[in-house]
Figure 1 (cartoon, helix red, strand yellow):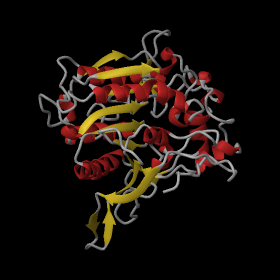
Figure 2 (figure 1 turned 180 degrees about the vertical axis):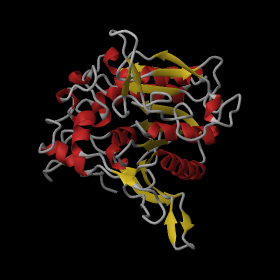
Figure 3 (figure 1 turned 120 degrees about the vertical axis):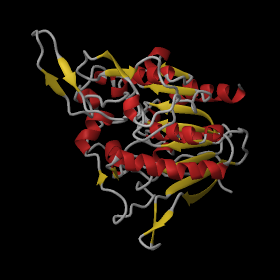
Length: 380
């Protein structure tokens, strides 16, 4: 077995390769069923399985990507030379499973069965992920410094990154249901407690899968998790300003989303609910033009299957999540979920955007915050 020498999707010069961690690699599919008179397989997810030469950790990692991404984004780092987070965890002795969500990447999209797809265009990518400081669409956007290169089309690093972006299912309910169904089968196949590493949209699926198989989930790490509760932020919302009684007062209305709080589809609450309308909502703060802070009214229903699963939320300083991740964390805490929230700037890690795990200081984040937290959870 030779040392792994992966070719990063961010590279343009073949000579710039790095030696990764010695490991074994295989892949498989799980979750498929047959449609159209058994002539088409649909609903499957591609699973990349990486095993270090010596496994020293008792809990495998399952890595779940965000919107428009694939599992490939966990594999490599930035600047064409650094290792990715998957490689970092392999070096620490973790067995890893990396998925491509249904109808994404190497998980086939069946045009006669699956719903329509949506692709992120270059301008949206630049505004939200790679060059937010140039657009200044939210208060901390100007602090973004960790993206390699200029972050705009025509820059070598951006062009390589954007070429890796995939169309995604447009219907979040369809994607949630299919990812949950296939993910449950993956958990049953592994059949021992895992740690979820989720990013952005992928956090919903970590929560749904932990809800479905709580005994098979040890912990969850959420990087800029999906939120805020119940409504989209201004970055994704059809925002409207409502007339007010005074010139100084501004009232904004945002697009409803995630009717079950943080998920698009049902998740188990106690006391149980049969409709999302049974989750009484309380407006905490509606003064911001960027987001509305809404929580469950007290006494809050508990996410009963998540109350014994520790979670870590990591928020990047310059990401649009810097505006509202505290709302997501409060929602989890009101629902009884044990969660630790780390704002990177408060621990001296500055300038990151939403794609923190492939930015220039990505290894600093995993070495100083994510890795030690996981080590503590496993030890406890």
